[in-house]
Length: 189
Image (cartoon, rainbow, N blue to C red; front, side):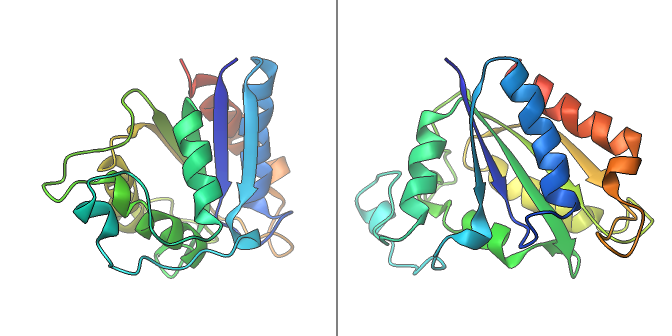
């Protein structure tokens, strides 16, 4: 059975990001994929300690023992991932950034990727601003950095002009719901 991991960087469990991630999860499950969905905000993850233990030992493992170990295990066992994050202050949330910083063991000192080959990643981003291109530099930078690990970057979407409770609900935006579903459906193809 194929496996997928969905990491949600939003602190809102019922917000637009989580709703779109659930739509992608639905598409994956309809294909018989075993899906583990994790809200990063529920975990205790320290930032990278720059101890270089992973580099000195030339391993794709981290010396810091916290909840990131669970994420690393899921990443190693899955066939693909979806990372979903709202955009705060022009970039992904602190929760998503902490996960990215702890991807350090998956990048060699010479930038050689250490993620097992063939793993795919797609992204779901949300923002409250109406211009979908406004935060493109931050989004591109995040996806580029994730790709350094060796994860094959497939697709991404930006749900824009969204703010749960303050703007029309994401469920009323058919194009965003359809796009999130498609991201889930195409992840492992």
